[in-house]
Each structure stands twice: as C-alpha cells, then as structure tokens.
Length: 613
Image (cartoon, rainbow, N blue to C red; front, top):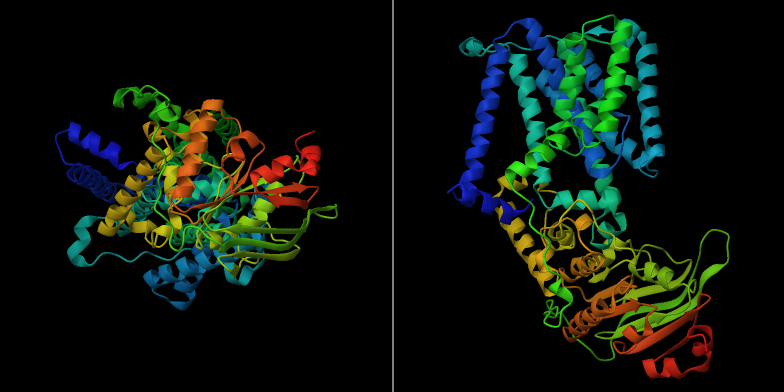
C-alpha cells in the first residue's frame, strides 16, 4: 500500500502508474476467465474437484479475513458454512424458493449470526475466543444431527439442482462452475481491495496494538464485530455454493472442518490475498493425489500439515515472497540517522482551532479516584487543571499513579469517582475513540505500533477519524476515484509529518527494522499528523540517547509554538522542567504539589519523595 513504490515500478517499465495497474488487472481477470471457461467445458470429475477446492477457498478466505487481519482464530466457520448449506437445501427443496434469492437471505442470516456470535465471544480473546466459536459449531452440529425430520440427521439431505443457462448461453458450459468461480473471484477482489485501503493498517493495529487504534479514533469493538459478521456472511455464501455439490450432512460442517480450514490458511500463508486459496488446493486435492489406504493417507496428510506449518510459518506465499524478493529489487541501505543531528528540522503541525494560550482550562480532572480490583486505590482525589497552549508535566516516583492518570484522561480507564473534562465537556464516560474526536491524542511508554507495516502506514492510522468513510469505502477503495485521491493525500501527509519530526528518511521502512529512537519519533508522528489540540505523552524520552532527547525537546517546544497543549509524564526532570509551564507531582496516588518547575524543584517535600534529597 505504497503509492510511491507503485509509481516507481511503473515508471521503470515506461508506463504511467495507473495504466500499469489497469493493464495488470485486465491480464489477471482475462486469464481467470479463460481458466473458468476451460473448467466449465471439462469432465464432471475434474469439475467436481475444482468446485470443492473453490468453495473451500472461499471458506478459507473468510477465516483469513479475521485470523490474518484481526488475529481472531475462529473455529466457527464450519457453523456458518452449515447455516448457508442447510438453509439453501431446505428452503429450495421443501419450499421451492429461488436459489438466487436464497443467496441474499443466506448472506444476511449468516452475517447476523456472525455479529451475534462476535458480540458475545469477542468479549474474550485468544484461546477463549477460539473455544467459544468452537462451541457454536458444536451446538449447530448436534442440532443438525438430532433434528432428523428437518435436516435428515446423519444421512443428510440431497442438495438442490443449480439452474441451467438459457439456451443461448449453453455454449458456456456448466453454470455452477461459472457461479462458483465468480464467487471466488469476488472474494479475492474484496480482500485485495481491503489490503490496498487505509482500513488495512487500522485492522492490523487492532490486531497488534489495540490501544493505538483506539487512541486514533477507531471503535475497535464495533470494527471487530463487523468484520466477523462479514466473515460469517462469506462462509454462509460458501455453504450456499456447497449445497449444489451433492449431499448436505452434519459431518461436513463439524469442528474438524473448521480446523481443516485453519490448516488451509496456515499452509497457504496467513494474511495474504491468495494464500488461503493455495492452502485450500493442497487440502482439497491431497486425497486425490495421494490415493492410498485411508488410514495411511490421514497420517501422511497430518504429518505434511505439521511440517508445513512448523517449517514454513509464513506459508507457501511467504516462502515465494522471500525467493522473489532478490529478483524484484535489493533493499535500500539504512539511511543515516540525521534526525538527531544539529541540522534537524523542527516539527510543525497545523495549529489547532481556538485560542493558543491564556487562562482557558482545556483538560481538567476533578476528584479522580481509581483502583485495580480489591487492592488499594491507585489514585485518590486527584485534581488537575491544564491550560490551553501549556506543557504540563506529571512527575512522581514509580507506582505513584502517573500512567494510570494518563489512561484515565485518555479513556483507557474509567474512574471510580470524579470527572474528566476536555474543552469543558465531561468525557469520563466516553471511550478513547470518542475523545480523539475532541482533539485529544496520546502516545505510550512502550510504543504501540504495527511492526510489519511501514512507518508511513503506521502514521496513516492517526488519520482514521480525519478522513470520512474509511470503513464504509474499504471494500471498493482502489476502484473509487475518491478513494485513490484520499489515499494519496493521506500518504503524502503522513510522509510530510515523518519528515517534520525528523524520521522522513525511514518512511518506507517497516517499524520492526528501525532503531528505537525512530520508533519513538514515529509514535509522535502518529498523533501529530491529525493536528491535535491536546497530546498526552507517557515517558517519551524512555530509551533515548542524550542527543535524541535534545532533538525530542526541540520538537515538543515547536509543537507548543503551534498551540498544541501537552501533558507529559517523564522521569528525566532535566529534560522535562525546561519545557514545562506547570508541573504536578504525584505520590502514592495523591497530588502533593502543582506549580512552576522552579517551585517544584525547590519544594522540600518533592525533593524528599522524588528527587531523593
């Protein structure tokens, strides 16, 4: 998702970037249609093998949508698959419903079931989420087995016949082949579009750094439930297609099917566009290629699957990328770290609306109290008033409640008592995503970034609530002129912001391949790119060298001249005090002093509890 790289590649071939992409897309689609035409004219045995592979390819894509992009390993895909197959079979055979009308109904019902299951199961994560979705599939399998009068029990039901082409189109061959392959193509296009939209970095940030996504304005819970619903709808659509391939029975949708789909994704390459389909080809075609004793066949299949997953953690697509990378082009050498040199340019961001300084209180905490569980309170009756355009420091010994107070202000935690106000509006009941819309952004002590994305892509996450329709347009983003225009603007602004904080030379590097100092500057750029009114910085100088700390001080001082209000938690008082207009000292969860840096430095109590004198 790098317009600059795409343009450079196209220019090297003597074509404009847009023409090169269009030509490549047309070539791929033409080849796909020719392959579909060949399959549609082939013998039934070959068609059956391809159709099963394509259906499971769609099912694998539906899982990768949540497992690869959100890290949610669902074992419920078999359940949604079964919903689609049984609904189609029962309503088409018994009620005479039109099968294409049923497709719409199946997508809606499976999607709503996914939203319901997601809303309940996404309260937990990791193994617990997988177990919850596994139970969903298990319950549906039991119901399908026991409701003999409706589902046919273990014997199953004969699926409906797929409608034939009109006489004028009979030359196209088998209609089910065209329908199935079209469905697979649409799923691939959907995933490709999402991966080339600004919604993709948001999804990965929810997967790897959820607090970062929330601070940028993303309603992470709603996004996870929504994407899970889309995944369930796709799985239901795969079930609709599967119903036309023969008998529909409970054994085809039980927990082992969900596990096999997960194996497909892992073998092909998780979080890749084509990987799940490659994995589906391996799993679906294996019994036909290795036609031996069924017991030995299962052993060989299991052994090969284990070897593929353990030896090829990136899947087949990941291996192919590593092999082709040297052929495409060599990696650029690491740029010089000029960001911290004497000639570094200071950071400048758009000035926030409203007055830049004065007596206006822009952030206020009144009587904040908070504790974890049944333990002692971490914050006790904390009052804090931050004036617009000021840099307000928060200091105190370890365990004094500084980071907890930052989390209360930014919305990660809800206070047990008291009120938080931003621009005079009470926000203590609002999530972090809502506070970002008021111009409040934050950084974290341990940088919350997505390691596999470039610096530019991470900074683009900070523009989530500044560009309309990122979620709504994601499925069609590269096809929309407005989407391409907005993506280019977001990319340009992100690169400019990285340059302004001194990390511009690293903009195309992955976060996992940059020094710690550049990582910290990237985190600062993710909040500056949105032109915030208030920034909460949690120990921004942690792990930086003396030269890097001086550079950071220059950036923060220039942000202040632009009218940005900052609340800075920091232990390095020699870095913090020269920047601050006011400093608040916490000790054991209580405010012991608020004053100027000189007042705090000279106070005997502060010198005793914090400065160690």
